[in-house]
Length: 409
Ligand code: C2E
Ligand code: CA
Ligand code: CA
Image (tube, rainbow, N blue to C red; front, side):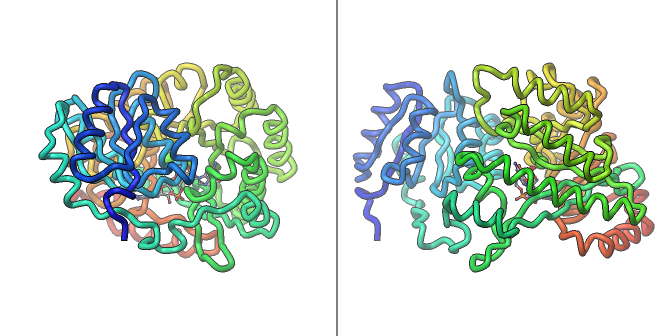
């Protein structure tokens, strides 16, 4: 059983007075293993070290360099397993939006605190807190894999591609698929990419991983093409993949060798890491791939990593509105505003729009009403293994025929 004095808490706030104040408030409640950082980078260093990794983070939203939302993205990349309390001087609406973002990333949030922080509110939140002791979580969720394990998984062909359909909202036609990799682990079962992409990135395995995913996706694309199915196949690239010109040559060669045309391949890019001071190499690679007629897609739009600056710099063909702004946007004014703004930016720049995370009929109706081009999400289909694709296609055609396109909720 953990006692309050052994539970590790990290406070992240650029305001040093606030750090002291919160530390004192927590100490009064018996929490003494409290550390503090005044910037995101230092906090990430603590999270990366098993000895200092916190069980709970009190996170300020407004910080000058890395803000709270960006910090949450890095927590996701690092598979942070603790809890979070947001602290901010922003209004209720802003805090609620931030809370939704955190939920979308599946990080448990205990609540939020308005500045100036009321000690009673803090103690109320803390009194409801049950620390996420790691042993309570299922094995497959908490395990952190080593680079060696991931390397052998790649060599042993344990990485398997799943494909999630992207369909036209107007006609219901299946336009393409997004390739989503999973690890079929011999003992731990199905492992999702959020548990190993970050490891691949940190250990210089990401080019090997992406090559494996791409090779398998191209083989599958060829099979679909031979069956007369004209599907655009998307794969996810890491920013790290765009660090060397060799990788670009490799992509071009693999597509040519497979006898496929770059027009049928979509490269989805998110800025999942701080772009180095020198963004010229990724920019050059993306521009060259675009000149070779690959389709470029900006992923997770609106989450802070995919910014307007990238739209200005890189000639994207497609914009994917992040699922946290799509699901329930029909009923939530804040989400709706972000959804509408993303759609409008894309239209003005002549880009095709894809809404991710379409989970139910209400979401689907919103896309229809607002003229979003493509839909992707569990309402249409969860990610499928290639073998299940033709059965799903038949089912989908039946759904379209039976009025999905014409009906309204
Ligand atoms: P993403 O590119 O944003 O992919 C969409 C994620 O949303 C997928 O999670 C998908 O399974 C999930 N999803 C689909 N429909 C719905 C829905 O209706 N509701 C909800 N709540 N979620 C939905 P998945 O497969 O776990 O992938 C997570 C992330 O891992 C991906 O996010 C992508 O960034 C990354 N990833 C996946 N495969 C690769 C890869 O081959 N290379 C790289 N670099 N990253 C990959
Ligand atoms: Ca993607
Ligand atoms: Ca996405």
